[in-house]
Length: 462
Image (cartoon, rainbow, N blue to C red; front, top):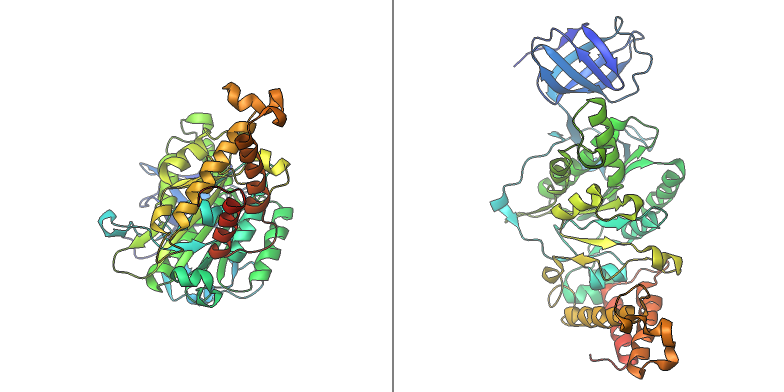
């Protein structure tokens, strides 16, 4: 191990954000590097590969105009670490963990590697306890559970940022069934924190999220990476966010909800870096290690046995070309525990949030609902709503194969049975009353009552 920094002026070539340094005596993968420019600026960088005495370095900033002869590289013999302190709460940072809110940097209590510490599988506790998002279709039918990884699959043009904003403002932990009935028992603020990482934002998206964050005032830590900022910051931001989440969860005993939007921008940045490194591409040009890279992020969510605190993750994935089999949502689905799927058809009908109930799923829902968590009849109500809505959707789906599902298009409602008409009416009412939720926040108790009243009105089994 080197006891001091080593400086080299042996850069042989510059290719985009990559620097090749020759005759390096000692270096290690992931080592933090300082690139000193001819005008005495210092750019952050990291060691990516080592081949003999040649080291490949990636710079976290624009390298255009760098002079090979006048630029030197300083190896620091340290890995990238995140400064951590409770003073982070209520602050906004950029993708390099520099303040973006105009306030000075806080004094760190500790430093932690941004890769985190691997969680022993045998020490993992099963995700339990309900997290109330305030969104009926999630809370009632696709419940988010503390310690879970539940992605939101969106498409271009759908209001994913509005859905994220609703969860950002309204997410709560509640204390059992009575907590669902009484807002005074909700736990929010000191022991429940939202860590928000926004990647590759346009200025319009940034202004939108800035208004949301300004309304929150506290109970959050935000990392914002703009589309015109260095691509490496897009890869660093979620790692900084998760390091913060792990610190607050497992050092401070808080329950942390991590929202990352948009993982597609992250994967595109990963592909850009891979292309610059001239690596062999995989599906759609993405690197073959994208699965393990995504897993290194997603698997940092969870709970630890006999320890307070938890990390729950809600990543947003925009599916290119509306294709759920695209490598990004496909690999995400393998790692995570369900999905919330947004529907273009519902969005065109003016439904918000436009969540497609049928392909959406929370695999850990059962552990976070029922007596002691939400309400004893939660599972029964959600099963009935799903059952009858599915029947109504089948009857009106024009592209379905069976003639029964084409019935309304062929003979109209007049030629259908009364029961079929009721199912169609129920599907319409379900979308207009249960799914439709513009500005109001609903508690889980209000959500279940809306669903129960809907079933009673149509005289369906309850």
